[in-house]
Amino acid sequence: MHVLMLFLDGIGLGADAPEHNPFAAADLPTLHPLAGGHRWLATTPPVSGARALFIPTDPRMGVAGRPQSGSNQAAIVTGRNIPALIGEHYGPKPNQATRDLLDADNLFKRLVAAGKSAAILEAYPPRWHKGINSGKHIPASYQYAARSAGLRFFTKDDFFAGDAMSGDWTGAGWREVLNFSDAPLRTPYEAGQHLAELARRYDFSFFPHWLTDTTGHRGTVDDGVALLTIFDGVMAGLLDAWDDSEGLIIITSDHGNMEDLSHGKHTENNVPTVVIGEQKAIFADLIDLTDFTPRILQLLEVPYEG
View 1: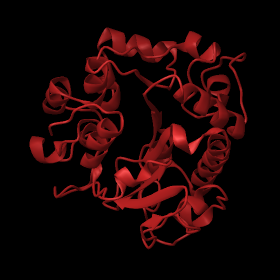
View 2: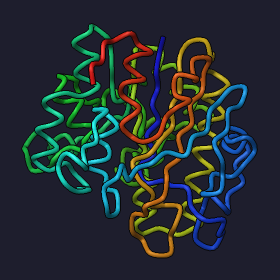
View 3: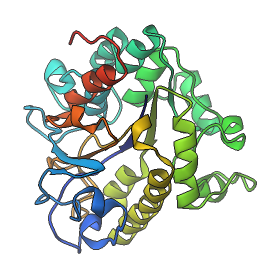
View 4: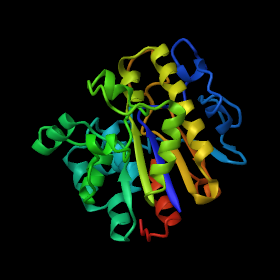
C-alpha cells in the first residue's frame, strides 16, 4: 500500500471569476473530472466518483484570521489543530512553538518509528541545502517534520539520477532559473509517469509544489493558468500510470491564495482535497486539515492515538 500526497501550496476554492481566478479560467481536462466534471470553485460540492473523492476542506479550523503556511502545514503533518494550540495562524515558516510541536510528534516520525518508508520527493538545489545546513534558513513545516524524523533531503545528484523530482514538475526551472543547462527535462505527462514510479518506492511520499503560492502572491491569471495546465498534464500521466488498487493519491493545500489574484494575499476559503484510489472511502468524512494524518496512518496500519 502506497500513499502519495501532492501538496499544492496556496490553492483554495474561489469565485467563478475568470478575471482573477485561474481555476475559473483554465481548461483542465484531467482535473475537472476528479470533481465530477466541475471546475474547482467555491460552489463545487463534495463529489464521490468512481475513481476519486472531491472534498472542500476547512483550513481555518476555528481560528480567526487568514490561514498561514507554517501552522497549517504543521496541522496536515501532525493531525493536530496547530493554530489553536499556538493561539494564531502563523507563517510562512514555523515559529518556535510550532517547531516544538513538530519535534514532539508528526506523521513522518510515526511512520519511521513503525518501520515504514517515507520521503519528500522534491530535490533541492545546492544553495537551498547550504542555507538549511548553516541554520540561516528555517525549513517549511513539512520539511522540518521530515528532518525531525531523520529523513534526508534529496539533492541535485538525486534529481539528475532520476531519484527525485523538480519542484516545478518538469525540470525547466533547474535549467532556466538555476542555470543547470544539463538538468533532466520532462514533459508534464512524463513527469506524472515518473512521479508514480517514485511513489512506489515508499510507503508514504510527499511532493510539494510551492509555485502556486508564489503565483498567488505576485502572479497573474495567465501565470496561474499556465501552472494549472502543467499540473493537469502531470495528473494525466500520473493517473495513467497509477493502479488504484496499490494505494491512494491525495491532493490538498494549506490555505487559499492563487484562486483570488485580486489582492495577492491569503484567503479564508476552503481548500480542495482530492483522494484517488480504491481505499478512498477512508477519507469520506474529511473535514479539516487535522484529518489527514490519522487516516494516512490508519491506511498504512500504523497506530494513532490522537
